[in-house]
Structures are given as structure tokens and as C-alpha cells.
Image (cartoon, rainbow, N blue to C red; front, side, top):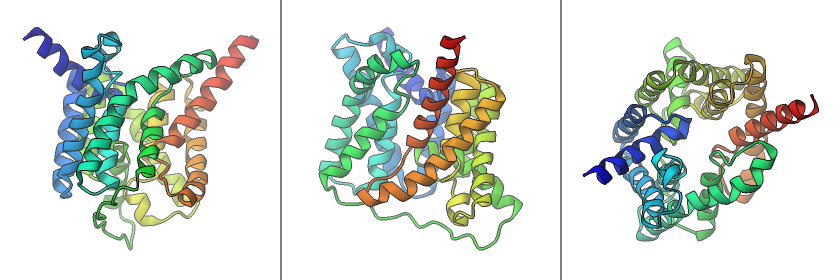
Length: 296
């Protein structure tokens, strides 16, 4: 019973660690948001994939008695749950897709460990890049693509649509377009660390403002597609790595422009940007600040 309890807590922590929160209650709210959000939009398969990826990435650490400390903290699960959300979003419900989901999720903790060894010398860590690399790899498998979920085209901007866009920017961290889901995610952050909730909301809002300022697609903006990367960067720099507000804002702006650049480059090779803008921008700020400390 004790081992079962530890394992369940590890799963919840792994869910929370997607936004750097080592908190069981936060993870429970995140999972609730994933289930509700995917159900509302008729994509329950995403919630099933999330659970499958989370479990597949956490179990090997315990079975092989390798990385159990990281597993207890949820650090083995967060890339797996993102892979579990991504593959059912992009690919059709086939046995091959589920096999790829399980295998790639199980690989994610080892890829994270492999990346962290050289990256630690730069003062950074893998963040969600194992999820990104393994999801990009899945596009090499020629899996049948999923049927697109219809999105409502926005013809005019209202306060309501902007508020939904802000929440959607939070929910899109898990590749889910649901303002209710986003609200639950923010509540989960608030329980763990109110500063993380504030920075997350500010990051999503900043993404919306920058996207409008540079005349990006209105529907994409209100669906949160310009909010989730800045939101993650804001949490990382403003809360986890305790950088100044100015550096965090700079990181958010860098994130936006990297996203714009990747949106033009990556479709040429048929892969999505995912959370790559967040990873790259956060790495840039952390490397610059760590070098400054060394020079001082």
C-alpha cells in the first residue's frame, strides 16, 4: 500500500512538474483540467494519452531502481505526460500511435538525464526539450494524422474573448484549448506558489499583447497559441530561477520572437514548434546570467 501511495504521488508530482511545481494537489488539479478540457472539446483521447505517457515514463525508474529520487519528485513524468498529450493531438488513434506513445514516453527520463549531464556545465538543464525531441521523432514514423478539432473563428475582439485567450494560453501548455482547463491550471499554480500563478498569467497576457502588436492571426491569439510559451518562460525565470522582473520580461519577449521565427522555419520540415521557444529563451537568459556571475 505504501509503494502504491508513493507511486500515485509521483504521478501527480510529474503532472505538476510540467510547470515546475513539486506539489501533489497542483498535479491533481492539472489532471482534472486535462480531463475536463479534453472532454469538453471531444478529445478525451488526449486525456487517456496523458495518463498513459505519465505512467509509461514513471514506471521504468522504479522497476529498474534507477532515478527513483527523481521519480519521487515527478521529474521522470513531466516529459512523458506532454508526449502523451501531443501524439493523440497530432496523430490518429491507431495501435502504432499508442505503441510510439508508450515507447517514447518511457525513453524521456533517460533522454532528460543524458541531456542534463553536458548542460549542467552551462548552468542549465533539459527543461521540456526531451518531450520536444521525442515528439519531433514521432513525425518520422509517418503516422496517420488526427482529424482536426474545429476551432471557432474570431471576427471581433471582446473583453470576453481576450480573457478566454489568456486562459487558453495557460491550457495550451498541455496542448489543450480550454479556458476552464486554463483556470484550473492557474488555481493549481496558486496552491503551490502564488508568484508562479501571477507570472504565468502575465506571460500569457504578454504573448497576447505582442501577437496583436505584430499583427498575428486573431484566431490563433484567442486560442492561446501565443501564450503558452511566454507563460512557461515567465514561470521559469520569474519563479523557479528567481531572475529579476526585468530579465523575466526580456525572456518573455525573446520567447515570442523565437516562436515567430520557428513558425516560419519548422513547417518547412513538417514539425511543430511545441515548447521549443520557451526552452531556447530560458536557456539564453540562464547562460548569460551565469556567465555574468562567473565574470564578477
